[in-house]
Length: 327
Figure (cartoon, helix red, strand yellow):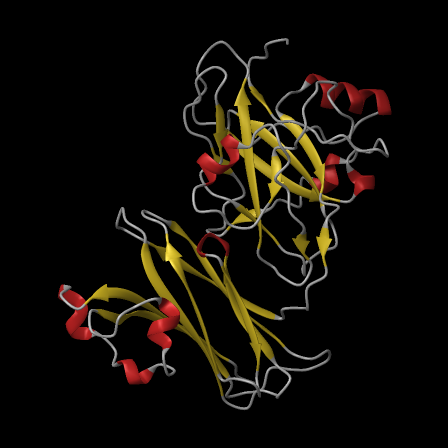
């Protein structure tokens, strides 16, 4: 295989010919739509020879987009930037349009960075991009890796040939068409809350999402965090509190998404709130156990659901986040 003085960003092979393949026998794109994972570096380097893409959720503004690259040069590469842009399939040849549609990270950056990559090694972006299924119907993605924070992207191409040569000779560019779309109910409201575990050991935590105020009876709401195996939902009228529990991995840094959905044409009523509380499980001898919530605050036999002993285990409130709707 030829060696390139840069990073390899692989293209998908599209049967329509919209995204030309570089001609090498690769099997997966390097711009990846996937549910949040606890350790992206380990996860996406271990499956480099497979396609880990998952459907984008049309009803959510928080689809996770990960990027990875492989160093094909004979020297180490450091401090490279990767940008991702959304496009329609007919706009790949018009960079002047799609380069104005960058994806952003949760912190608002339009790029992610790679650490130092030794020859032959695979690197994953230091964080992920977020792709909204609500803000746009553009689900084709273009990834560009560059040694500078501002990539050099042509304004246009004079011919199909010029475009093909640029894509096939520039191993720092890739494209993927997110053709797998999951038609989830429209989540008119959702919120990302940061979650981190400073301990090297996994910890059992439980969430409680509570709906308050004049929410219509058909309002649905839920909470999800893929690394914790949490994807719970309910409907106002059936419940007012939604519990969900899971083990947060050691040293985990990520997000939890709380969402709400009204019936078509509905409006969020003033005075309604959706509040998310998170509790951490500790032993009765832990220093924080003195701040534990009484077990009778939770549903009957809730400790059994968590696999906890009421004599030796406690739940301590870690934090609360909420959203209030106003006119």
